[in-house]
Image (tube, one colour):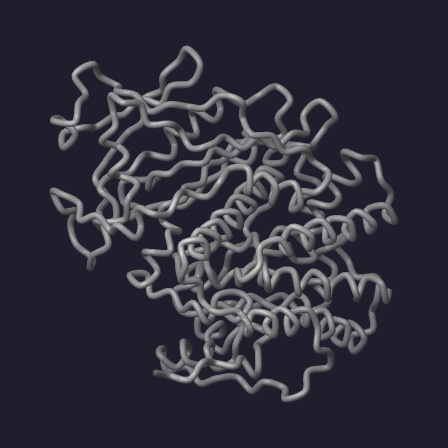
Length: 454
C-alpha cells in the first residue's frame, strides 16, 4: 500500500500546465483593480502590489488549471470584474429587494405509484463505460444512501448567502405519467415523464444515459421550465433539487446543474455526486479540496502530460488560510461508513447548489482565483474546487446583499463579510470528519484572524 501523502508543499499559483494550456492569468495589479467599482488600482507601487498579492495568495490561490480542467478547455474565457457586474443594468443581474429577497429550495420530486419504475433510475449502475444494460445491476451499498437532505442544504445556503432568508418550497412536486398508457411494461419506450405542480403538469423529456451509469436521464431545460412556473412572488431565486441524472443537450453525457441567472432559476442533480461512483470517476479522495493544491499531486498530473513542475518557494511569505485548511484535512480519513458517505455526498451537492445560485446573483464563471464560481469540466475537477468565494466574487455577493438590499456603506459591507464567515464557520463546525467542511472551517477561522489583525 502506498504511503499517505502529507501534502508537505502546496501550490498557490496556477500549475505548470496552465502555460501549456494557453491560460494567462491577470497580473496582481489587474486582479486588485477587478474588485473595485472604478476598475483601477489605488496604488501605483508595483512592488507593494506584488507583495500584497503574495500575502493574499495564502488565502486565495490561483486556479490550478490542470489537464482537462475547464480553463484548460477554455483558457481565454473572459473575466467578469466587479465593475462589469455592477454595471450590468439588469441584463443578467437582478438586484435583491425587500419584496424579492428569499431563496427557495425545491425538494426532490416524489415518484408516484404509476411511475414507480423511476425509482430504479436513481441507482448508480456501476460498470465500465458502455451502453446501458437492459436490466440495471443494483449496487446494494448505494441503495443504503439517501439523497442529501433539503433542510441541510437550506442551512448551508443560509450561511453562504448570509442575510437572505432561505425557505423550502411548500409544495412537493410529483413525477407522473405523461401519457395514460405509461407503465412499467412500456418504460423502455418512454420518451416523456410528467412533472406535476399544483394543478399543472409539465412534459419532461427522457432518454437513456449514454454512458450507462444510470438507466435514464431527464432533460434539465424542461425541469427549469417548471422552476420558472412555480417561482414564488417573493423569491430572489429558486433552485430545484433532482434525484435523477440529467442532460441538457443531445450531445451531453450528463449535466450536474444549470442556472438561468437572469430568470433567477436553477436546477442541481444529486446522483452524479454519489460516492459509489468515485472509483469509476477516478476520484482521488486524498487530494480533494483543499489538498488538491498539494505540490506532489499537481506535479504528478502535469507529468502525465509531459509538463515539468514549477519550483515552489520552500518558505512562503505567509502561512495562511490555505495552509491551515490543508493541515486540518490531513488529519481526516476518507469516509467509509454509511453516515460518512452520506455526509460526503451532501457536501458535494451543497457546494454545487451554492455555485448555481451564484449565477442567479449575476456572477459569471471565475477565472481570477481558485473559487466556488469556477467553471467545471468533470467530476475530478469538481471535487478539487474551492467552496469559498474569491475577492472578486465576494465583492459582488457582499455588495448585493449588504449594500443593495440592506443599504450598508463600505464599513458595514466589511462587517457583513465577517458575519458571513462566522456563520459559515459555525455551519462547517457541525460536520466533523468531512474533508470539505473541515478544511473550509479551518480556512474561515484563519481568514477571520486576518480580518481581526487589519
